[in-house]
Amino acid sequence: MSRKYKFNDKDKLYFVSFAVIDWIDLFIRKEYKDVIVDSLKYCIEKKNLELYAWCIMTSHIHLITGSEINPLENIMRDLKRHTSEELHKMILRHPQESRREWLLAMMEKAGKENSNNCGFQLWQQHNNPILLNTPYITHQKLDYLHNNPVLAGFVEKPEDWLYSSAKDYYTGKKGMIDILFIDPMIITY
Image (cartoon, rainbow, N blue to C red; front, side, top):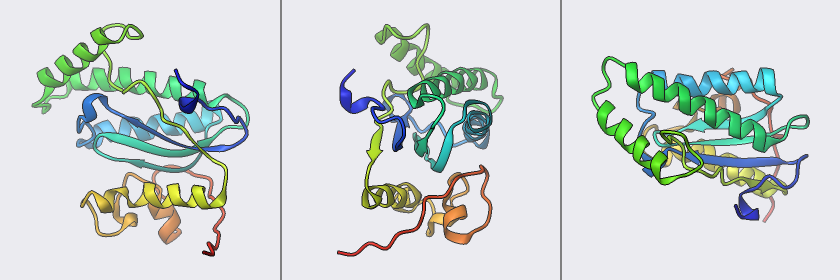
């Protein structure tokens, strides 16, 4: 794995993205998105994940995160492993999953093509962490993360996307997950 896909600076924040194999639109069901929400809450409570921003799109997830106690690469590995297993089980038993056979076949194919897996693969292999080492980059990624559903045409305003931290940032109301806030900044050009 190349250095650009590693968490090299342990005491910094990172913008992390991870996607479903082949960019499959998996997160179109509330139950599937709730697996991610519950898992993030667990990682905050039990693994000392510091979550500053988040957004679940239909095929991928964006986070701004850090951890002063546990290595982020371990938290991300465990998060992806757990959610992969839980979502796989959920796909198997969801009564209205019309894409079940296709989804399972795609996951099995990806698993066979990757020797790091045992049986199936749900997530693409990397996390694509980007070190947020300046206020400008941090706020650029924060804006990108929250505006992703707007640019995709799902909502008109970032705070209207339920599965993100935009509500916390844009309205001051509590969203679905307790987050830490990134300090506001004034950008001068």
